[in-house]
Amino acid sequence: MSLRIVRVQSDLKRALASVFVRNNLQYIAIRNIYMSKDLRGAKIVVASLDPVISNEVMIKMLANRIGFIKRELRQFINLKYFPDIKFVLDTQQSTMLALEKLMKEVEQADAANARFSNHEEDVVSLTDFRKVDSKLDDPLESDNSSSFKE
Image (cartoon, rainbow, N blue to C red; front, side):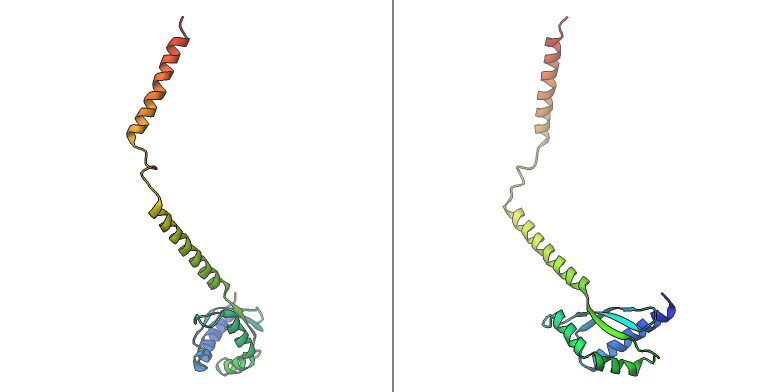
């Protein structure tokens, strides 16, 4: 990735943050920006920080305001060709939230099972092993001595 692409990405991210703050959209988090090599296209990965607003509604709202957002961004960034902007939902955040929910359910199920299980049955004492060893050793010696009489 060229240095110019990295610079335009960082400038675009900074400008988007200031546009969101100026227009009272602080609940939108900019996760990443992917630029095309010719700097004519940009995918902006966003996520909602407000639990009341769903991610799908937020994406539709941003898509409806794309002209306004581009006009505001042009005040901060001076480019010959301003990139076409597309807002994309951050799927990693929703995947992480779903995994966290599943992990909590598993932990709760394990805690419930631990309360009702009796661990004394699972523990085998050393004396039990000695009894098993002695039973195994004795029959072998007696069988060898009785079966191979010469």
